[in-house]
Length: 63
Image (tube, rainbow, N blue to C red; front, side):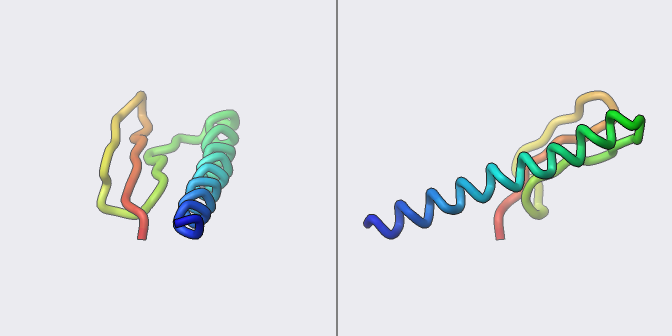
């Protein structure tokens, strides 16, 4: 059971790290005036998403 918890913590930690990394790309692009059509974490198909301004934000499933 301890191993399962450690694997879940690792996946959660990596997901947060990747999310923050990609957020840095998004904020930098917006700061320089670039148009961002989609910001997504995960792979298609989309599990959850919404449109805010010109950007579609979504969360996809993990592979």
